[in-house]
Length: 349
Ligand SMILES: Cc1cc2nc3c(=O)[nH]c(=O)nc-3n(C[C@H](O)[C@H](O)[C@H](O)COP(=O)(O)OP(=O)(O)OC[C@H]3O[C@@H](n4cnc5c(N)ncnc54)[C@H](O)[C@@H]3O)c2cc1C
Image (cartoon, rainbow, N blue to C red; front, side, top):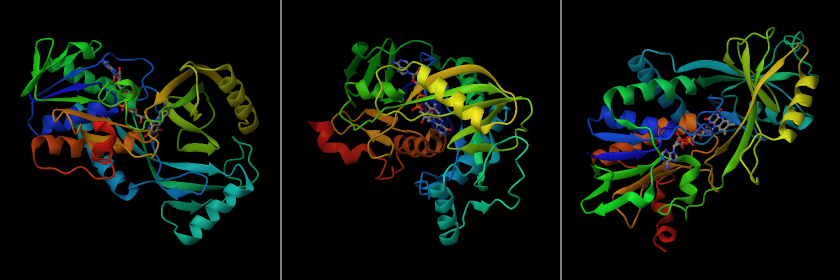
């Protein structure tokens, strides 16, 4: 076998997809951690983010790539995995209103000022107007993970268990693991790579995020509605609401503090009734310099990684998984800004 992949979140799903397209043989080991980031992501690909409303890294390349890739996988799995949407951005402060206006005057790409200030008055309280970010994409992550998992199970390519590093044996030129022989072992194990003996020296900066699922009957699910936090269309009449970004945390559990703050936010923002139906937390595999980790360990040529997708797994995973798969197939190059070659010295210590 060519490749053994550890983890079937967005990273492992996309890597196995591209390996299969390239005709390479692979297996996946995944223990379906209910707290994994991919299982709780809102699924939003938003080209303009942050206090200064900057275009996100490589977005002009990542968006068309993602659109095509999710459509192709969706067609193969006979389900819709991506849809187009917009973010209606209600300015929470005068500074954010000014940031939007400044960005729009310098570079209007992806931005439109809100023409009718009162358009959303029936549903929301807002007094500084709104603008829209358009197009954005919504990835249906839950569908992707379960449909691709069924495909893997159907082929006999997935072992539903926890990978145990102590059982991995280097039998040059292959690695052996519990009856499997693979030329490459690729870790797509999310937050756990930060404690993985091959990759723990990489500058991970794990980030906890919490969110709610909220039933709101009266608001149409035509866009993402944002005022600091976001209401993201999820399923019929249910919105994903979040999120927090915590760099320091002592556990990965949902907290009273987030629930309290978010309920207050909803009371102030919404003019219509709502019902909270779930509260969750998950840890994003983020990195100090906010760039992904892709490629091979400088000391162990068959050991690789696709990780560090941070807050942007939906757009980064298909693109960098494709680069890694091509590299494994012997004819590709990983973008130097994502390639873990940049940490060669640290990883060799
Ligand atoms: C609250 C929240 C909201 C988010 N919203 C968005 C968003 O709107 N848009 C966006 O682009 N990104 C978003 N993200 C980020 C996105 O979720 C991540 O970037 C992405 O899911 C990371 O995927 P991954 O495959 O690297 O890791 P994970 O999703 O953590 O997957 C790792 C997988 O590996 C398995 N695994 C780990 N260790 C082992 C082992 N030893 N043996 C077997 N299996 C193992 C786990 O079970 C899991 O299935 C959000 C994240 C959070 C937490």
